Every structure is written in structure tokens, then in C-alpha cells.
Amino acid sequence: MEKMSLEVIKSDLIYRGRLVNFQVDTLRTADGKEIKREVLVHPGAAVIIPKLDEDRVLLVRQYRHAAERVLWEFPAGTLEPDEPTEVCARRELREETGYEAKSIKAVLAFYPSPGISQEKMFLFVADGLKLVDETPLEAGEIRVELKKIKDLNQMVSRGEIIDAKTIIGILYLTLSREGREGLEGREEA
Image (cartoon, rainbow, N blue to C red; front, side):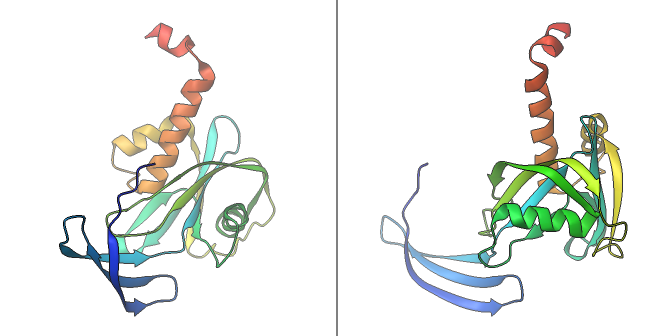
């Protein structure tokens, strides 16, 4: 991985929040210029694709104040200090959906908004789901719904799913299903 080196001359914390901090960094470029960059400091998050079976997943509907609307999303949550990503994924799955997973597998990591944020998200696929709590911790804020995997791309195309982490999860599902099915699907095209 290529890493460009810009020297950090100064870092000013301008806001300390409950979940995130905001800082302004002064950097020196290779040619000696000083530039400023605003950075949202975030501990990272786990995103979970909860597969009920090979054809269906759970999505949650929740109001997102910054977007000023209710969004379709895969369950996700912020990492606690020093918390392993899988522990966070299992905790958030249960808190948001009431389900536990027999197996959970890390599949990729990504930066949802690298132009301004340090947040790194870790995508997991959860299988062997079992409902263990019919009233999950966040039940008043979140509604859980079952969706067919084959319908998810159409929901994105129609603008029903606009959450980036969920779109990335759907892309992962689509590509992994194509890979599992091999050339059979392509030969018919």
C-alpha cells in the first residue's frame, strides 16, 4: 500500500465529543507548503450482513438525524475502546436485531469518508442466526425487516437504500454470490 508522507506540524483539537473528536491538522507538503486538513477522529465501526439463509438477510430501518430521514441499513455500531471488531459486530447484531450468529466472518474493511474522517469500517457476514431476544436493546429506535438478497440491488437502483456501508455490503453479497455460482450465470448471458 502506497503511503504519501506529509509531515504533521501541528494538530489542534477543536471539539471533543462522546463518540468522535474533531481536529485541524497543519501539514507540510513535499515542496514545503503548509496546508490545513480538518479531520473527524472516529474509533471505527463494525457492519454486519445478517444472513438468515442463502436467500434472505435482515435489514434495519432507523432514523438518522444527520441525513434527516429513516434509512435502510445493515446493523452497525461504533467500536468501544480496545474492543475487538468481532466482539463489536456480535454485540451490535444482538442489540439492533435480537439475533445471535452461530458464525461470523470478517470479509473486508473500508473507509466510508476518507476525505474528512479517520473512521474505518469492518464488514462481517453473520450466519446461523437465532432469535434470542424478541425485544432487542434498540427496539424502540430500530425496526428489523427481512429482505430477499435478490431484491437488494433493485432497492439501491430505486434509491431506497442510500446508506454507503449497506451499499458496500450489498456489493460484497452480489460479488460473492456470483463467485459461488461460477460461470453458470455468465454462460446464460
